[in-house]
Amino acid sequence: MPGRKASEDARRLQILRAAYYVGARRGLAGLTVRHVAAKADLSTGLVLFHFKTKEQLLIALLDFVLETTTVLHLTDDILCIASPLDRLLALLAREMNRLSAEPRRIRLFFDFWAMGFTHAGIRTRMQAELDRYREAFRPIAEQVLATEPERFAGVSAEGLAGVAVGFIKGCAVQSMIDPRGFDIDEFLAAVQGLVGQLAPSA
Amino acid sequence: MPGRKASEDARRLQILRAAYYVGARRGLAGLTVRHVAAKADLSTGLVLFHFKTKEQLLIALLDFVLETTTVLHLTDDILCIASPLDRLLALLAREMNRLSAEPRRIRLFFDFWAMGFTHAGIRTRMQAELDRYREAFRPIAEQVLATEPERFAGVSAEGLAGVAVGFIKGCAVQSMIDPRGFDIDEFLAAVQGLVGQLAPSA
DNA sequence: ACTTCTATTGAACGTACGGTCAATGAGGAG
DNA sequence: CTCCTCATTGACCGTACGTTCAATAGAAGT
Image (cartoon, rainbow over all chains, first blue to last red; front, side, top):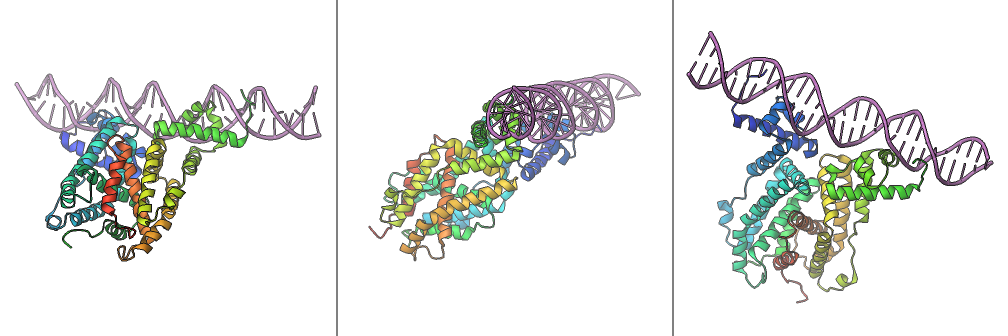
C-alpha cells in the first residue's frame, strides 16, 4: 500500500542489504532489480526510486561491500612483534584467515572485480580499493626494507607491499575455488620457509 | 542461404573462435548466442544446432580456452639452472611474463572462474585445471624440499606448489586490474629478496 | 480540515535473450 | 537426372529484464 514511508537512509540500507544477500547467493549475474525488491519485501519501482538505475545500485553495493570490509588494522599483538619480517608474516597470516572466514564477501569482491574488466566505473573503484589495501601494508614493508636494506636492493616499499597483497589475493583465489583442499596453515608454513628466519633478532 | 555446408569440426571451431572473440571483448556477461553468430557470420539457429545449448557452448569455450593455453613447460634454459630454488624463481618469472602477455585470455579465465561460484559444471572444470597447473609445479617443489629439508619442515610438495600457483594468480589479479602500475621486474625482485639467495650452491 | 508533498505500488512498455521449427537448398548416392 | 539427407536460415515464441508512470495513501504543514 502506498503511503507507508521510511527514512531515506533506512530504505537505502534495507535495499543494499537485500542486494548483498542476492548478490552473494546468486552472483552478480543473477542480481536483478526484481530479486532485490522481493528479498527486501518492496516493489520493484521503489528500488529504482531510491537508486535511480540498476547501475547505480551496483555501484552503491560495491561501495557498501568495500566499506563494510574490515580495513587492514594493526593490532597490538602484531605491533609488539620485534622482527619486522615476522611482523609482516603475522599480518599475512591474519589477513588470510580473515578472508577465508568471509567467503561470501570475497566471492562478491571477485565478482565485481571480474565485472570491472568491462565496466569502467567499477574498475576505477576496484583499483582505488586495491591501492588503499596496498598502502596499508606499506609501513611494515618500509620497516622490513630498513632492517635489511642489502637484501632488498632495488625494491621499493610499494613493491614489497604489492607482493604481500599478491600473496593474499592468490590465497583467496585458491581458497575460493577449492575451500576444502586449501590448508592455510600449510600455506603459511611454506611461505615462512620461503621467506626464511633471517631476522636479525635470531 | 540454406544448403551451404561445412565440416562439423570446422564449424565448431569457427563458432568457438567467434565466441572467444566476443567473450574476450565483452566479457561472459555480454556473450550472447546472437553476438557469437553475428561475429561468425552465421545465423543464430546454426550456433544452437552445433552446440545444443548456450551452456554447452560456454563449457566448450572454457575447454577451448584451457586447451589452447600453453601448459606449463619446462624448457632447457630453466632445467639447466643448478639451484632448485633459483629454478623455481625462474619458472615463476616466466609464468608471470606469460600471463601478462595474454591479458585477454586471463580476463576470460577469471571471468569463468567467477562464474564457477554459481555454475557447478564450470567450477569442476576450473578446479581440475588449477589442480593440473599445481601438479606441474610439483617436481620442482620436490627438488626444493629435498635440497633444504630443514628449512621447509612440515611442508609438502603439494603445499609448496600451491604457494607458487597462488603467487602467480595473485600477481595476475593485480596486473589485470592495474596493468600499468604493475611492474613485473620489481615484483620479482621483491620475491627474490624474500626468498633469499640461500641456495647451497652459493 | 484541507492542501501539499512524496514515498510507494503494480501494471505496463520495449527490448533482448535462449530456444524452436518449418522451409530451403546444396551435395552426395543411386 | 533424381532423390534424399541434413546443414542452414530467419521468423517466431515465451520469458525475464530494466525502466516508466499514473494512481494512491500516509505524513507534514497551515
